[in-house]
Image 1 (cartoon, rainbow, N blue to C red):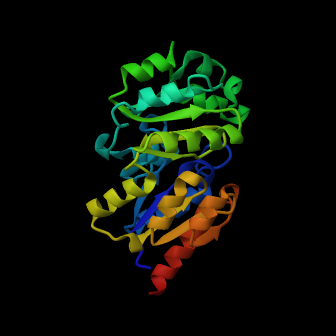
Image 2 (image 1 turned 90 degrees about the vertical axis):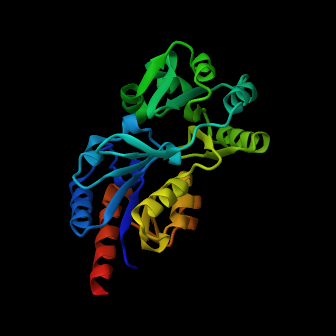
Image 3 (image 1 turned 180 degrees about the horizontal axis):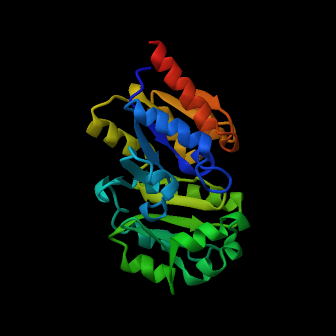
Length: 279
């Protein structure tokens, strides 16, 4: 392929188990950037929680955030493209889930918010202990998250349901998809149902950037590990799943590389660059 762009999921794909960018992956990204290839972040994270390990790399200019609900130009912080939840959707989500044993995360203008009780003790809502530090660093606590959602219902980039089991995630995802037609419902980890506008999705953000940069999907390689990456991998000319990816992500991929804790991204990038040089 005539590689012009690399789109990178972060957690459990490009970042290691410690949430940091390894030396091997960093070296591979720097090598691609030196060759004039656009390296793009494509994450379910909001802008405020993107790690400096990646955003500070010279040459990374664009970030697809909140599962495609917002696309930013990193050097200026300008929001280039995006969607907010449809009118009435937030209230309907709250109504349908009012009696469920869950809590919510809300994303407004690239900032993440959560209920104060959740931020204080994420494990009480099913968050694994390994994610507690991340939640506390990146979520702004509010006294009543449902009231916050209602107050900001016309400005929500996206919402997450924080659930306690995979069965709850599957059931609630199906309920929301069937009940509210204008939603994009996906998931990156077992405890989250991630909700945005129907026209969002990482593939949608990548399509926008392809048009902005004047490149075709055939010139893009995309990396991911989770269900929320599957559409992006299918959209790209070369979709690459790390070996630890979910079944849906693996099914959408053209190639499978090493695990996220084995610098699988670096392995695949070096292979892509070698193939490009051979043409």
